[in-house]
Each structure stands twice: as structure tokens, then as C-alpha cells.
Image (cartoon, rainbow, N blue to C red):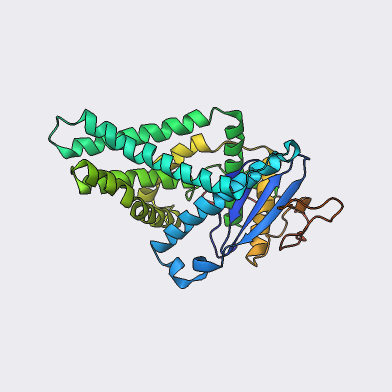
Length: 338
């Protein structure tokens, strides 16, 4: 088993896997084939020792998730729209990311504050305001997930989300990366970003209650300035919970996050699991790790990231297509205690 705990993200018709020093992306191209690409993360601040420090590492992961994740989300959409001649440029990505952050802060942090302030203005006990604010935030969060999940396109993203989790489960159990082996595992995972958001919501209720009822300007500023602090602490709690997930107390505390994943993850089909496996295999190769013996070598080709002139060969990514050992004919037993 690799020494690093791998994470990931669902894309449009694809999966991004984040390794120790690189990410790998695999997408189902409109022509039916799997295309892949890799990107190094060990440059800049990510490659420094400070990026591995507690609390700091959570902010680094959050930054990479927002910036790198959004960029590949847009690229995955571009791949699906190739035949229509549609492509979003860097300016569109920056604008989209900026608007997403602003709208997210307004809807999930400032709007609940406004509702709670108005509805509890005649109540002297400040704890009531913070409880109302927290409940409004939870209601908006769950309502948003339920609403977007009704879209057929988003439902497919949720299926790829499930495939990502199932593949990570198989890797962590030491199983070969095959469709049958991956299929044994649940779509929920203890280190999921959905669970991280649940932890952040709970921490925000606690943190904002400590701020107390202040002037409107102070309360607005606290909601914005405390976001990175809450995110950093939430990441450490999630890591702790993943390391001690067999502890019954930890299970109870993190159980709400697993429940929310019933909305954000769906059972994938075999084709989606194949894409997730390719993404994981490329991420392992990018980190210099070995692919589990018996894993499936699905047909794949490097992704074309830039339009190539007519007649030119397709550019290769940094890593060649791997040579994977043949598939085991006898499936291994599920690990005990799961």
C-alpha cells in the first residue's frame, strides 16, 4: 500500500486523483475512450516544509482544491464540448472561481447571519442567534445539495464521486484495482470533501458563538476572517477522524458527514469505475508508487490539452501509459472488520 493517503474529486465525465506530489485526471472522452493527464504539485509553496505543517497544510490543500480543482473541472467540461467547438479560456476560469467564492461566502456565511440577526433581534440571549444562524446555514447547505442533485448531469458527477471513493477504498485495503474489487466498497468515505464541509459548518457555529453578538460590521468581518481558520482546523479534525475511524466516539461524531454523502455520492456504473481506476493508476505512477498487482490495464490515451495543428501527432503527457500486471482470476476476500 502507498504511504500517502490519496484523495480525489469528481469532474465532468471524469475523476481527479490527488497524490503526494502530483494529480492525475482521467476522463471519458465523447468518442468513448479514456484520456488522461498528470500535473505536478511539488513546485512553489507546496514543495516547502512549511506546507506540511499542521493547520498550514489544510490551507494548502484547500487552495489546491479551489484553484487546481476548478481549472480541471473547466477542462473536463471543455473535453465534453470539443465537438461543439466550445472552450473556456483562463480569464473565464478566474472569473468563475472569483464569483464562486464571493457567492459562496454571501450565501453560506453572510445570508444566515442576516436571517438570524433579523429573526432574533428582540431576544437578548446571543446563543439563540448563533443557533438560528447555524440551522439556517445547515438548511441552505442541504437544500443546495438536494436541488442540484436533481439535475441529470450533476447526478452523473455524483456517480463519478462515488466511483472515486470506492477506488480509494480498494487501494487502502490493498486490493487490485479492478471493477469487481472496487465494486465491493461503499460510495461514502471518511475523508470526503462533503464531510469536510459538514465539519466546517459545525465549527462555524462554535467559533461564531465565541465572537458573540457584536456590531454588524464586526460580525460580518468575523464571518469572513475566520473562514481560513475554521477550514484549517476542520482539515485537521478530518485527518484525525480518518486515522481513528474505528473508534466508536469518532464514528458517532463524524456520522453526519457520512449521511450527507448519501446525497453527494451515487452508485456508479462499470464505465465510471474504469475511469476512476485509470486516474488512480496514473496518480500512483506520478508519485513513483507501484500499481497493485492484478490491477486492470484499461486502454487509455494522453489527453490533448492544447489544440494541435492538423496532421501533427498528439502531444504526450509527462507519463507513458503504464504496464499493469494481468488481472487476477480469483477475487480476494474483503478485508475483515469492514
